[in-house]
Length: 611
Ligand code: SF4
Image 1 (cartoon, rainbow, N blue to C red):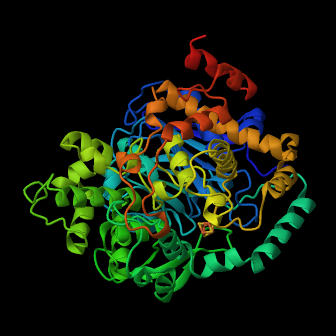
Image 2 (image 1 turned 180 degrees about the vertical axis):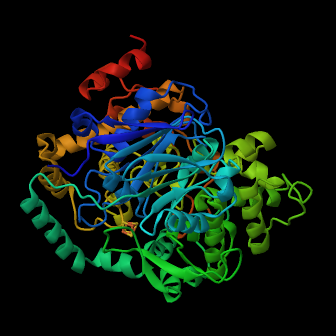
């Protein structure tokens, strides 16, 4: 009895075949599940320097070891692959019901390989896995498509799919699931490149039984009672992540006009409270009483007249201050348009902000932009660009490549305005105003992500956020902890009140695996996961030079940012040296042989060190 299935489903699209495989117990002990297991399979099965769009690239969908058990906020799912945006290993985590349906079907992982000969989708039911024609589904948006799949395969069907952006191979196309999206890193582009429009599941509910049922159910009850009164949970349930808008603005951390400034006049117009007023219904993921989402009405675009779950804080940033726009309705409409096409809202907004700044600086003009006046605050132009990006039309073709590739193509110093790390567009946190985050994003093995390790002590003021010295060990620690949480898929917004001691108790009761009894060992697993991710990237040629920041962060003092005004990252080298030292990496950011042995990653030594 245990809460994981011990099995994966391997789907080959070239041959329209599938098979079940056992996942060795050792893998759970060493990598837990989800993100951890995904990097293990990706490292072992992908050859170095593989084109992310080649059929040999793999897409791995997974659910956490505690998902679907009644525990609240642990039922999201993860998709991992080699990213076409960054060229690194990648994972995106999202909500919806799909992950739990995977587990009901009997799988912790689905590995999708090959490329279908024609547009296809895969349907999983009680009896078999079917490879079906998706020609009629092409061009459908995720919402319509998921409805059609329910009509065809039954109302209990849960699915994941790509929209037009995935079909058209936008480098930051998302994978949609219910009202949520696995947005970042172009996982939807990988799916689109495989001619795979959707994966659907309709199976009877089949729950796993915890190892120690009584203890586990006691812990779940305890969690529910903690959550009921937890202030953070209450705040998330009512306002959700947009509450961060005024908090970050107050700290000078919320980027304005493509990271040129750090606070915004009249920010209250797009505060969490303002978005709260527009909330029609609560929304959220399977087995989550936090339900941080909210349905809001869309007034313009193809989803006009309907309601969407959103916007999150990141989307408020990407279609608000980043573009010089303070208009709630526009932000909701832009969010809906990205959902309709299946686009990552962060990368889309940052690519548009990049184009706006190039226009401001005279590097591009209306003759390059299909006649659009890309001036700050121009909502019409921004809306039009979303559509062009999704369809890869006109300037949208170039912007659909992401800021890193677009800057290389444009030249003329345009890379100075590309707000990306390793090709991944930056989230809503100004690195100059919080140096631990600058280091965490610079060293993240998936590029400029805010979800690779959050320096909470710097936000709370426990640690000085402007100091650069002494950050290496703490950032190494939060990255290890995040790797554990992503491998359990403990939702960062829905896990209020839980700590590593509680994770350990839950894992023990759920699985009976003794290795999970020790919280230090849990952190060691986290370290193993980020180390193997780094090995994947090292094998691809990534080194210290890639652990970098946009030039603006190291050369331009931050303007108009309240207490953060004048901040700049002065000494990234020292930050990196300390971080590498804390993790046992060489000066070049490569794990040493000793470290690989210590983490039980001996099989990587030959490829990483040639011995
Ligand atoms: S807190 Fe929000 S994102 Fe997290 S599991 Fe709950 S509803 Fe989903």
